Picture 1 (cartoon, rainbow, N blue to C red):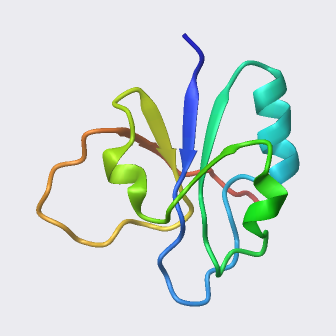
Picture 2: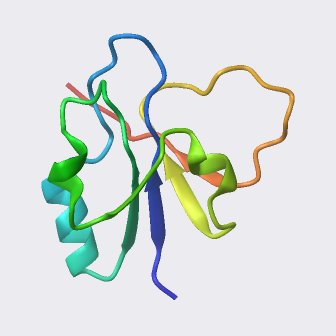
Length: 94
């Protein structure tokens, strides 16, 4: 089974960065990954730049398949619902 990465749309105001660029997403697909991208109007990249990925509405990560690994930059909003997916946040070193 192919690893499935799901890039969630960032919800923090003015956060334009993303944890996965279109070019890296393409490289991962070429190496057997399934990539799902949540559409985001605030991202520095337009949804059309991720045309090689599966595009889904923002916030749909909660309904992602159980095997999807959810990726994002910022922390999630406080909620009482338990998380049912694995989550990763890339480490950035300067």
